[in-house]
Length: 635
Image 1 (cartoon, rainbow, N blue to C red):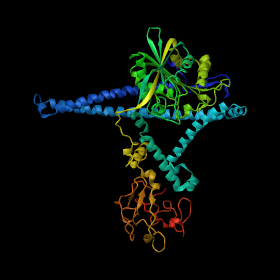
Image 2: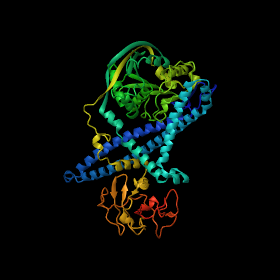
Image 3: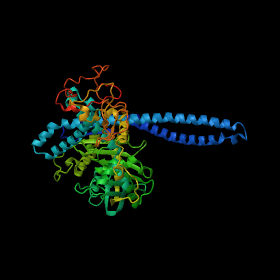
Image 4: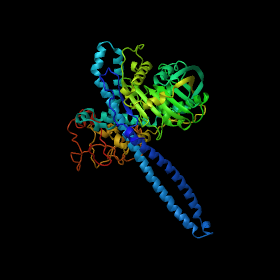
């Protein structure tokens, strides 16, 4: 690649004319920029090293097997030096293992850096998109006053989806930090209730996200099948993307997947695959429609693995053979499918995937496999909420770009508001594509439409489109079990699940988060004595019985306080074997010698965070304070 052809990383707005919100403005990210070339080169080298490590591991295994034979007593019979050869083999195998570990550490570092960069890049782009939308507020208000409800609705949907996702992200980040995410006033005002809600809520969400098994459960139990041809029509390609998508407008009414055969100049055939958008009735989310609920699960959570199989079957049905040229396009849900078919690499190993395009597809951050040469263009409107609905920005690369458009055509006659607004309508995107192709240099810059033309050039000449219907069926051979199935509901190891989530968050143990959640049984009348007040506990005395909300069982500290009766006979509160509190669990605050005021707050001073236990009539007077298993600890 000629370095002089590379573009700066941040292209910025490319429209030299008016940039007010009502004009047609574009911004291009990705493509052959310096940053994308750097990451592409680095990831390709990492992929080569990974394959080299696999080869070295296989060689190490062979050497180890030979060493086992060379170092047996019988091996020395022909010559005494044979066992020495085995020793040298052991040393060689050890070196191979050491080098392999070093390579693995390098690969892990490269992947971690790449993921961190992409995460930060996606976050910055989402916030910039939100800032641009908020900047349009005066213009949108003015259009609303003039009766342009379509623009107002589109803008409000996008701000709501994008802003809501980012607000939820910030909220969850605050919740993950517990009370440390609040100031002093917030901590005093919310107290332990905040600890309980933040710790439990965040970890529950993380545990479900990592262990729900819902998408895997659905995909393992159901298969997407190609049910047959439902339509066929002939048309003439003119080498433009607008003409292609205009013809594909007929597909959704006839089926769920279309394959178009176009004869090329060399006498071969190029196959263009089109995937329409979501077709789901929210009042009847059955598991049979090809573009329904399960189609959404497959596209979003399963990298369109099932769609890839259906596309392969459709290509074979129209006569495509291994190595033939194939291109993919999609709108909305179909756009996710098109890019994911390229990303999962399954069809790329069988066919020559030349190009892919998508219109209004939800953003997915994942990158293509290193070395992927498929020219990909994602076109999306800034005021379309669907590209923001997953909270991710479209992935980019040397051969993959995103064209972000702000376009409002007051003359475009749309029949009322759809669920996702006028900016997500198919007609609206047809208008955008036509405008882009009318003056690509103005809207995309010099050679900015290269990746776009790579697809459009394939649609040139007489073409025949075959439409297929797809549908989901239950897999009769399904045997995989997942956490959401009934047999796993009886005794779920919630503590283990949450610990796995904590490990992923870099926390050492559950107690680091769930310390404040430890609750204490109220004392019995005999324990409280005639004063009706809980006996004061010092550091020298033992801890009382506590209940863990995670394990849902009662644990007893190492020693009982003198004078207290055994609680094991009380109804509903069975005795348990004494267990020490986990290290790091936030225990009680105690009063006694050797505990400075910094670590032990004054329990006689009323405040919102620590109630006054000595106030007569206080509901807290009946509650006994447990002793920290490892001494006092500051909060």
